[in-house]
Image (cartoon, rainbow, N blue to C red; front, side):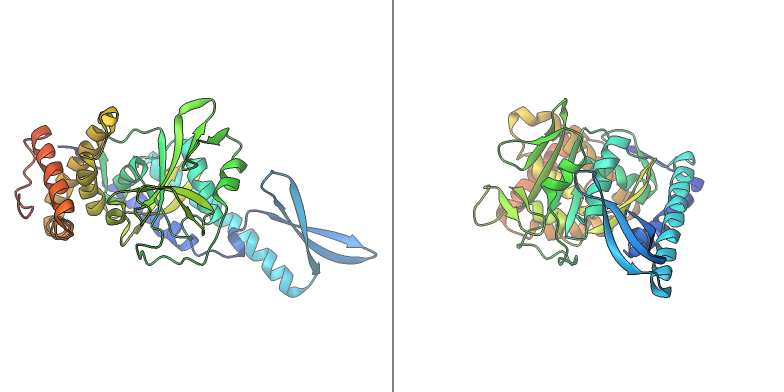
Length: 341
């Protein structure tokens, strides 16, 4: 077995937190990261909104003369603070009940990009953090394969329709700089490395395009991303999952588990020799998810496999190679239900 089911208490706690966090995801003035300040000028009361800029310096925005409408707006914002406290309490209860959570350093980065609108702009969290998030989403705890020092973010670009509102824009570089964690971009500008912790890096990837593997600018994010083969498969029809951290929940867009699993088989053979460790992790994560799906939704897994191998000879050949490697490394895993297996 690659996993152990979470306790009923943990699954119930996560379900309550996920419902509450998804509702909070409907953005309003209540979720704005700032505060309101009243000033008295010549006997009249005026309201200002205070919020830090990208350098951390506080700035004030004049709102106008005190009125019933402004008072209602301010009350709504203060209730938002109460909801955030409630969400943090629910999160800590879920963690105490046994729900897996991510480390605070990684949570800070993901939360910053989430608050800046990355996921509203069509961004998707990929890589091992998603695999970790599936634990609570599926109600399990993985026995291995859930450790990472990389953060991987993706955007479908223009070649994949992901049904996510795309009218939100942001500046990725400014947001990473605002973290003040010492991240610097490498020459390709698709990866940021922490200057004092070289193993911790942030990678941005997208689907392939006419330019092949030439890095491409995603205008909605003002970010350069590295195209990867077959990336579009895992980014179609994304779902929302809730990450748990001590600072509270973070709702992110993620690949469906069945697509993530089979995508790992696709990319296994694409890893260069110097990345054999990651290739091994690909198979490990695929095996855990495939075992779960075989036991809980084998029809969905089979349908997804059929979709994958129908996309052309290059797709089917690499999928077959990945499946063969999976069988070799994990011979006890029965994957006979996969079409053509």
